[in-house]
Image (tube, rainbow, N blue to C red):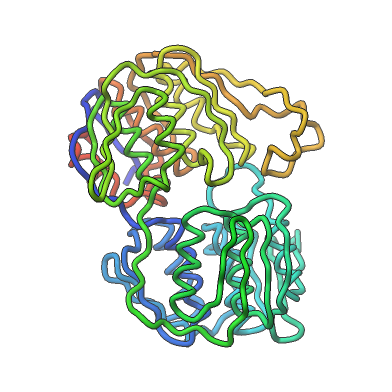
Length: 443
């Protein structure tokens, strides 16, 4: 197998599709299930590569895992290992969240430096600091690449912890730790993504005592968690929704996306309307359609509820079709423009630049390098530009979706190398695209 897509582009994509379950919820609730006293069952779990890797890892740790299409059951009572091996742990970034259930059950855990998409350094010092605040003794061995943690008192202790900069996965790890801690905990400057709230809802339905007040989360520790109503149906993937919205607009098509919630896409929708894209709100979904030449926009990615970093690659591609010069300023990750050179291969006109800012430490959510002069955190996209076919390489999940959209826009045959990376975040994407009229095959 060549791990590639071959696409015959140039057709407007039209039709109706259903969203899959949210990747960024599925991974987290599957790990949360290890805190429970009995079997836990979920529905709407997407059949994507990252979920398959995590389920394989949980099985290696001793959990009883059963999967039938989008239904997954986890029995954590058979867990018998507290060390995550390098091969499986490095494949997926959320493996670091296993510290919460493994420490809860075994009072010790060894986990390698996490993997996932390489979007810059993505330091986990905030995660480590939060664990320490709950009474965890954790150290990193640079020679082996493993973190080793112990729970000296045998119990997590309640904590008041403030994240200096918002972190999605760090917040969820803190939530899982605080749920089983003795006493009360407060997580300040917590991430506010809807995926975090879906994890909280799942825990609260099954015995947890968690309350959110804007960016603060208040948690009263409990002794046990037992699922009351089975299965828990996780939310749909709004990041996938934005991707298909761009597919519609970029190919001058018309796509209705079922199960989409308007409030979760507020800032994406605002930009679509600003650019002149068509929007129609339907019962149980949203229709995105091309109606007029697109207009330039300026975008800054910020923590939710603002314009999300997972939308920016697709948006940059869309702006190659807009009249004038658009700008995108990335503040969440320091290396989220890996797709730019790929788009340039097929004719996109994109230039890097660094905005002038006085409060750079507050604006950027990543750890800044000592030499700020090396930063290039923004791009200028000129359009409209007619893209041509080519051979494109996938750099990360969202960049993969972006080059796939580009290949559907351009006339002629394109080759997308690295299809399996797209599979990490999108469930059967080629099947959905074929339903919309795309000519695509996997080789």
